[in-house]
Image 1 (cartoon, rainbow over the protein chains, first blue to last red):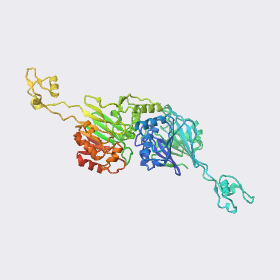
Image 2 (tube, rainbow over the protein chains, first blue to last red; image 1 turned 90 degrees about the vertical axis):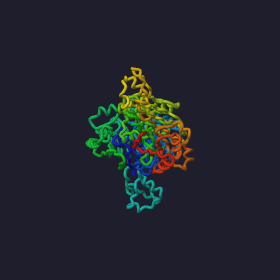
Image 3 (cartoon, helix red, strand yellow; image 1 turned 120 degrees about the vertical axis):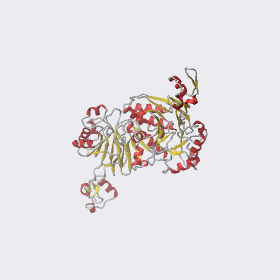
Image 4 (tube, rainbow over the protein chains, first blue to last red; image 1 turned 30 degrees about the horizontal axis):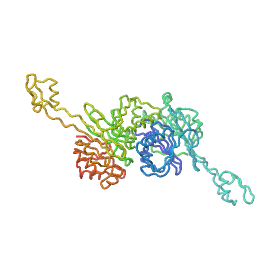
Length: 301
Length: 301
C-alpha cells in the first residue's frame, strides 16, 4: 500500500471545519507525517492513525499553519512513554523554538528526537524500501517540498519459462536484478526469457506552499502523484503571486509539464466555502486531478 | 451577564473529543481568554465566540496543554487584520518563544501585542467595571491563578422613599456610594432610608493546575465561583501529589475552606472516559459543584 491521507486541506485560517495542512504518507508499514498544522494530533485520533507508527516528520516551512501542531504532537508522544527514536526534518530555525518550549515546561522526552535541519536539496532518508528527497519550492520564506519514492522493484521470475533451468539462489537474485546468468553447465540464460517487469516504482511529490514557477516541474518530473497547492481559483493570479501562492490552472500546468500521472490539490483559501470549482477548473487543464479531502486516503498508483 | 464558557476540559493528552484547557470569561461586553490549549481557535469558532472581542489573554503556565493554541490564535487575529491592541499576561519565558516564532515566519502583526510578564501576585487589570488579579498556585513549574471581580456595585435609589426630597445629581451619586447627604435646605437624608443594597459584587477564581494546598483557600476566599482542577478521582492522592495535580475531594475541600458559593471542576485525566464519578465524588463534600463541560456557559451568581 502506497497512499497519502489528508488531515488538513485549508490555508492559514481554519474555516468550515477545514484544518491547516497535515498529511500522512503510508508506504507499507512506514508512515510519514508531512507538515503538522494546529490540531494534527486530534486529526490523527479522529482518523484512527496511530501516533506511535510515525517515526519521520517533515516540516516544509515555518508558517504557523504548517507546524503549530508539532509541539503538542511530540509532547503527547512523550506523555505516552514513546521509546522509539523520532526523526524530524525541518528548517533550522525550528530547533531553538522547540528547545525554548521544552525548557519553559521543564520537560525532557522519554524518546530521542533527532533534529535534521533542512539546508540543501537531495536525499534525506534512504532505506531498502524507499527514499525521501527534499527540493526547494518558491515561497515568501524558505520552503521545502518532499518526494517519497519506492525503491526500484526487482523483476519477477517467469514460472512458465524458468522450469528448464537449475539455478542457485545467487543466480536467482541476478535475474531479479535484470542480469543474464550462466548456469553451472555453462548455458547462458537470457534475462528477458525468464523474467517479467515488475510494476514501476511509484513516487509522491509534495510541493508544499509555492508560487507558480515552471522550474518546479523539473524537480517533480515523472512523479506518479504530485500534490500542488491551489490557494485560489483562476483569475486571482495576481493575488496568488503577491502572496507566493498558486491558482488551479497554475497547479495543473505544473502537473502537465512534470508528466505526472495524477494531481492532488489543496491549501484552499478560507474565502471559499465550496470546493467544487477548484476541481472543475483544475481538470480543465489536467483531468487526472483530485481534491485533497480531509480523512480521505489517495492511493498512489 | 457574568459567566465562564468552557472550551477545553481535559488534561494534557486530548481524548474522547475533550480538548486541552481554555475558558472564556464574559463580563458584560468584555471577554477574557484564560489559557489557550491547542485547538482553541477552532473551539472558539465551534461555539461562535468572536476572536475579535477578546482583548485580554491570561496564560497560567507554560505546560503545552495550556498555551500551544496561542501562536495560532494570535496569528489568525493578524491575518484577519485586527487593529485593536491585545494584552497578553503570561510567564516571562513565553515572550522569547513568541518572538522566535514571529521571526521564523517573517511576520509582523497588524495590531499591537502588549506582553505583560507575570512575576508577582496582585492586580493585573483595573477597569471601572472589573478587576483581574493574579495569585500563585502550586505546580511543578511556576503557575498562576486569576481572579475576575466585578467592581462593588452602587446602592440603588429607593423610588418609594426618595420622592420627599429635592436632590441634585451630585447628591444622588453620594447616596449611591452609601453616604448620607444634607439637602440644600439643611435637612439630613439618611442613606438607609432612601437606598437599597445592590446585588453583591461577584467573582470568579480560576486555580489553573495545582497540587492540593490548603493555603489556596485563603487566596480565593469568598469567591462566588471557584474553578479547581480535578485531574484524578479520590484514592489517587499519591499520584496526584507526585504530578502536582489534585483529586475530587481535594478540590471540594478547597472550595469549602474558601467559603465559595459554587465550584467548577475540570482538567480530567485521559484515563477516564466517563466523568460522572468526578461529579458524584466532589458533591459528597461540596454539593454546589458542576463539571466543566465543553461548550457550556456557567453563570457566576
